[in-house]
Image (cartoon, rainbow, N blue to C red; front, top):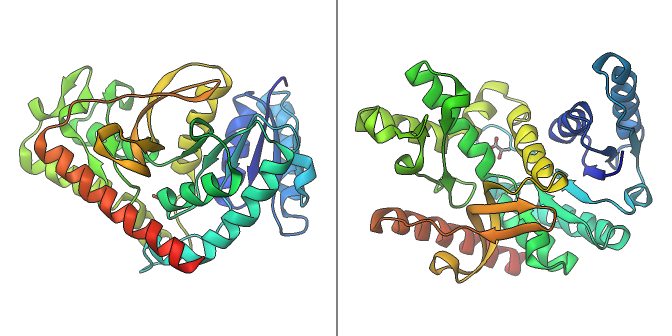
Length: 310
Ligand code: LAC
């Protein structure tokens, strides 16, 4: 394939992302993990599925970062996932150290790559990747809004018994309990859901979206969600690889947009071959802006905590 994407972490999210990238025939895929044999085994298994799935993406696995050299995109999923009862923030220190080690290596071998961060706590991990890589802000972003919006869309479709394809949703803010689903900008066939559902039902779907990650953790008991997170990361990668310029909610470094400074947080962005090509500023009501500010404060607390820990 013309393009190359490296996925760091051959766990559930990483391996599923590798599978989706290959089966959509978007790029060659390199899967990297520290565990001996794991990325090699999963990559070989995926390569052996290729004749049946009918794609010619090359999928390889390695324990060495050299294999990632010259990647167009690096998707970083490495880190420990949440266990039941754990918040995403409990993961902060362990995953900060993993993120530092990974980012310095991938930046060395692929200095022109675009980084898509998936590890939690998401917004804080974007800061670690941004600081460690030294990459410009349009080449570092986090996957969260696409996932949270997909969850909101799935719940809207279930509630109204309509195709998921007719739904659209926006979830802004940090990827945590303070995330900001925006019902006014969420619609079915262009009709805002505020016209289609009672306030009580919307509130219930918003609450379910906010705790969507925890709902899966509690069901699985031994890990966190991976199908939808992988799909979300791959949608971002596809928009970049094909220069589609999709408008997607992603964690982006804000420099005054939405009145927020020097902080990664989820906002709508245009994703194309250069990475984040534009931050889209949509009009928020006072209450929506207040919710976004509250979410930004929660991310700021984590970023301060990172500084204390490092
Ligand atoms: C979730 C994790 C991946 O939301 O953050 O499921």
